[in-house]
Image: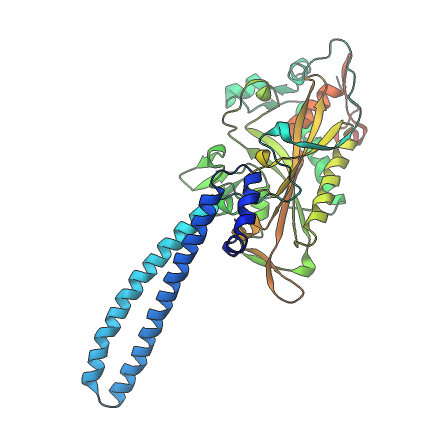
Length: 424
């Protein structure tokens, strides 16, 4: 959530940066924020004045009673009663304006960093790095969904029977491959300095609001209305909320956490080739990395996280590229995002497997996540997160790119975790 003081002091800049995200209501909403804040300040002043008047009258009444001037004191009591009525009315008006202002701020996206390119869709994203050789598959090579059936490792139809589309059942070596990847990702995160946590798979409304899933992505989350819970779309939500309403010591920063979790997404509106096989699921496994740092060092932390993800893909022997997302393709809460894509040789297309983002102070303002700087002044921290990695499309690319006539080769870095060199 943007800070009101920043919006007031940088009106034109805020409108210009929101334009990079193609936010059509930028000017009207920014001006409405300033107008509501002016009204809030006026109400606050009126409220403070009436409270001061009530306090002054209370002291004067006390003095009059001490002086034996009961009749005069009783006259002032009537004015005190009027002050209390006014105070109640002004308090209600102030609360109403404050609530309207908060709702308005929640509807305004984060400002994109200056490095974010302009653009309207994924076609306008910038490729900033590419590595690896796209494999040439043998004649008769097939997509991963056919391989899953051939080797009986992932059953999409069985998952459809048990739950519905997008909930596959991993079997035998398929289940073993999932476990191998999860442990590999967690161990690699540990080597990079991330502390492992195991968070809940459900969060309350306050947590979803704090990291920006609400109100922006409410329709994409599975909810448990009876209890007021939401199934997590990513471990980012519970892990970042560990630090909600806290003030960190600067000496403890950066904080770096990793977490394995199952993730749940409705993926409403998805269709066609994007949902075939493992390409888009409603339930999937992912290892997430989350960092908290000072504004001065958060972009160094972002580079570290990018290098970590690149190292994982390198060890999995997958060709990959990194894209800097344009304003129109970024999330509501992000200040800058880098997507990692791996090439799927059988599908002949790039698949997104990770997003690494810096949210700057947008989440921390909602979270009330702060730190004390070297001058003992309280400041908002920067929050960052990334997938390291999401399993479904990684598995799809591994199966497709490493297939040969009679099996599927397991990358060397994964063999000790998997317990074999090949899926037959």
